[in-house]
Length: 116
Image (cartoon, rainbow, N blue to C red; front, side, top):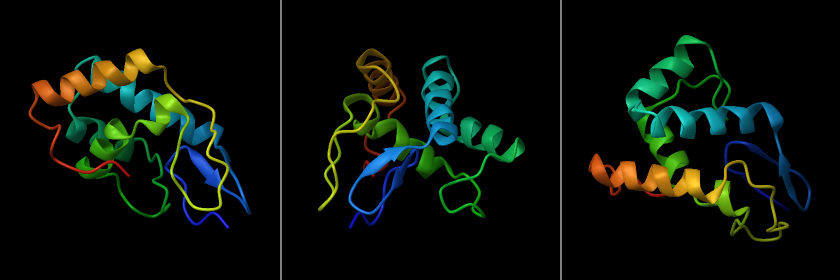
């Protein structure tokens, strides 16, 4: 049984599928970041517009944005979870992911958190 899926995906009995609404938020996070917003600014925008986290009642934190930006599963469609189908639809392309990694490094945020 799949226990947890990254934001943008839904864990089902034995697989993980795309959550379209959350996937759109993930794409927006990457887009905002590579176009100049910092993780804390992105978190503020998501909270301002009442975009829910995976926990529904939680507010977005800088750390959560950073974790999303560092998670290669969004570009590769590969996730390491026991008993789950490891092939997922990608939410962003590899170029967008690489641009985000470059910017994280430039801002000194590449070590601020671990990918989820």
